[in-house]
Image 1 (cartoon, rainbow, N blue to C red):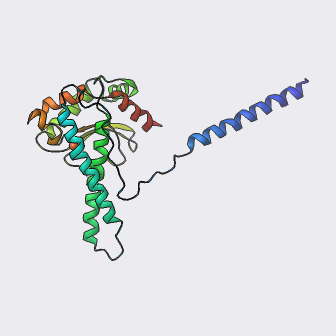
Image 2: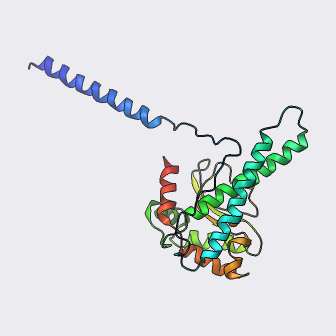
Length: 234
Ligand SMILES: [Fe+2]
């Protein structure tokens, strides 16, 4: 092979590599297809763990929470979606507004409950890249927990959610506390979800919500939280 042929061969190989890289990048950039659920067709997800095996949270509490509160939210979400499906331009605005308010409440309740149950069933030991990211952003391994606990304590005796969310709008991790289902961080991706409604703990702990927060943190499945973090960062 002479010099010209060698250069041509190398150029060909480089071009082929570049083309392959473009194809790979194009594939990576492809968005997954939308997967809409038909109005009224949401189904409750089963508990993702053996409810008898969690430490400090009873089977009775967990199954009652899942079967009544969470499943009730899914049922109500389905019902309100079917009503919204009948909306026309003649439907009074106040009726549409009421339906939309209920839709958001039931949707957030259903989706947050799903993430709450999903992030239980572990050993409560922060691990993975998400643990490093939390320590890095909050300044120490314990600081994010101190802030999250304080937020949860502020909701004790009432209702609400504590969510550690990734905000793609500000590119940071945020501790969110809400007193109901409907408020949420705009575009925030929930990574760790704690239910602070009294129904989440009163059966086991009465009004002692601090003990419930301890039990929750001791059962967090950090592998699930880290998986959400990895997916959100893509
Ligand atoms: Fe709940």
